[in-house]
Length: 133
Image (cartoon, rainbow, N blue to C red; front, side, top):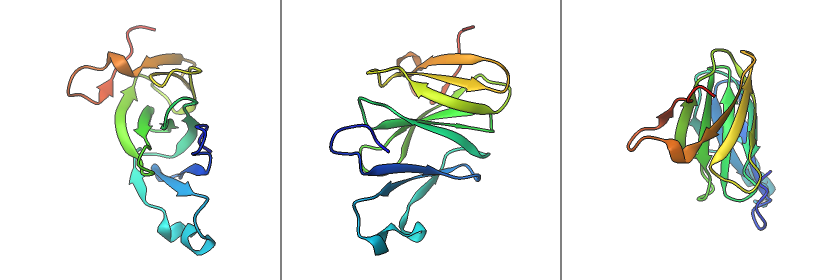
C-alpha cells in the first residue's frame, strides 16, 4: 500500500509476467475486479518485489530480468520513469532511502546490493548503469 497520507488506499500489484498495476481499494467492490485493473508491462520476467517511496507517489519494482524500474503513480496509473541495469542475476529486493524519492537500493542473487540515484541519469535516457558501487 502507498505510504503517502491521503493515498493509503492505492495498492501496487505485480505478476509473474512482469506486469504492474495499481488498485484503488476505495472503489466499489464490483469495480475492483481484476478485469478493471490497467496493467503496464514493466519487466520481461517475474516481478519479485515492489517498494513504495515514503515521500512521493513513486515505487520501484525488481525482477528476474535483472533490472529495477522506477514508476510514477501520481495519476493512479503507472508510468515508467527509468530502468536500472547493473545486476547479473535476478533482483530480489528493493528499498527506498527514507524521505528521498530519488535514491533506492536493490539486492540480487548476484550477491550485490546497489544504490541507485535517479538524478544521475543522462538526459533523454531511461537506462541507468551503476558507477562501480
